[in-house]
Amino acid sequence: MSKAMWGGRFSKSTDEMINEFQASINFDKRMYHEDIRGSIAHARMLAKCGILTEEDRDKIVKGLEDIEQQIEDGKFDFSVDLEDIHMNIEKRLTEAIGEAGGRLHTARSRNDQVALDTHMYIRRQVTEVQKEIENLQQALVETAEKYSDVIMPGYTHLQRAQPILFAHHLLAYFSMLSRDFARFEGVYRRADIMPLGAGALAGTTFPIDRAYVASQLHFEQIYGNSLDAVSDRDYIMEFLSAASILMVHLSRLSEETILWCSREFHFIELDDAHCTGSSMMPQKKNPDVSELVRGKTGRVIGHLMAMLTTVKGLPLAYNKDLQEDKEGIFDAIDTVKFSLAVYAQLIRGMKVRREVMKKAVTEDFSNATDLADYLVKKGMPFRKAHAVSGAAVHQCIEQGKYLEDMSLKEFQVLSPLFESDIKEAIRPETCVKNRNSYGGTSYEQVSLQLKAAKELLASE
Ligand code: ARG
Image (cartoon, rainbow, N blue to C red; front, side):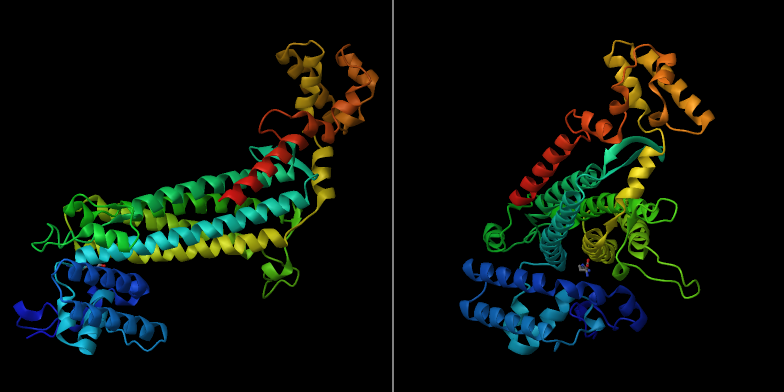
């Protein structure tokens, strides 16, 4: 007879290669804490409902707590022959406490057990990811405050467009991360539903109390349909979606960081401790962190695609395909947490070259909109003002100079509406100051954004 737990019906033991192929212990062992807490709650419920004696319950609880300690002390020998974390722990428990261990799995299947563990694990990880999001948001706020008066070109089409505050740019990422944080809150809510008691698929013949298990494990809700409970992987797909969107945000920030520290932009200097050099070119200082985060974004998106594709054609209820949910989500969790943590460091260590940023604004035409707006405020229709400003730019390009170099006379040839206050109107500081519409780049608006950001962080 096979030595596997389900060996009763089999006359041969599992082929060694097949065993290894189907085992998940090498990756699902990271859910040992959830598995043990779930089993303890289950045993307590069984005893409460008269399905298990109190004596057996106490043996089980004590045995499981000992196993948790052994795992934490690195003294637990995980076996591939026992397939997964659930059977590894159950087998060890039975070895330690005898028959009582064999009663633990009453009214339970690995299908609802694995679902329970994964729900609990994701719930815990969502909270950890949210902490890392906040840490990065904090770093963005600190840096925005540190450089609150720095002006840089804002871009569209990667062409200099209008002067903006560097803090405004950083706070755009703060906003994206706030939405990420909220998205993970939604993931938490969908993971916060208790599947245990669904059995293999159809419920159980025993008089169990699912609400008691849910309350012990602090679940807000209980699955109302056992088939759904064991086959739902929405919360995993949602986690991966939220993680992918978050990584896309970090990837955009990475792209900008990489550009900004290139010699072409030269806007920022990353800390030496956050970069690497080249084995051949002595002058190199490479922004590896940003490149890697940009690269890892592809991996996380890949995990989302893999999960969607895995679930797409699956009939109800449990299918072993679902075991494929784990490696991707575990890797996504590690990647997202690590990327957020290194990014917070990178941002905190970054130095801004304010003069270079300023030069990129002054030695260009990002103030051309302000020139047009000036004429509009003196009564000219915007379309006409746009054309006059365009002509001024054209003239400057031909003469190799900038709008600020034009004399009042030259301006007045283009329109009699120009007066001596035009000089002031097109200074970068004025351009920034005047974009005072709600959410705009003015000093006032950005300081309001900063204030709101700090209030949000304090309330989260
Ligand atoms: N290791 C499995 C998983 O992760 C546990 C559930 C297995 N259930 C079963 N009937 N084979 O999905």
